[in-house]
Image (cartoon, rainbow, N blue to C red; front, top):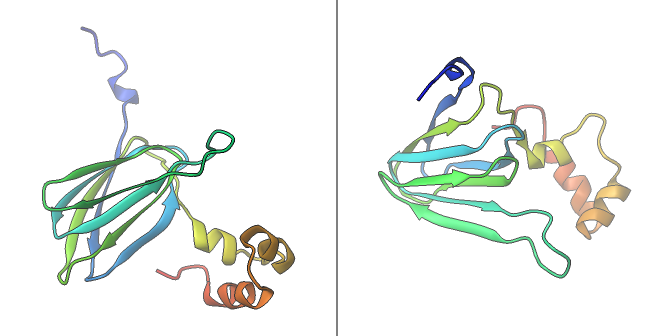
Amino acid sequence: MEFNNLRNWVISLARIDFEPYGLNPPHTHPRATEVLTVLEGTLYVGFVLSNPAPGMKNKLFTKVLKEGDVFVFPQGLIHFQFNIGHSKAIAFAGLSSQNPGVITIANAVFGSDPPISPNVLTKAFQVDKNVINYLQSQFWYNNN
């Protein structure tokens, strides 16, 4: 077996420390699949399938992970991690790219500059304009 292309096999690793009830909010990696391993604590994780067949709904897949558990988030799908424990949680994420990219959904939609028109968002989310104005007022560039 030849491994001539090993130099092109690149991954990124990240350690994520969660405070009690800490959240890594819904986001996506447009250029990578993520493999998450829990080292300590308890995380509620999930991802949403998108663009279902006609007549189908977007399906949410979730799991409660404990120490030693592993979960895969497919490339490009919206996903999240939430510490449901009373103590800190630690996880390692491996991503299948040196440049996975990240788009945090709420920041992108409600925190853009200039803001997306409330008329667009009220129609898209089917909520009152006051809700959109409130949500847009909550976001700034780095709200972590």
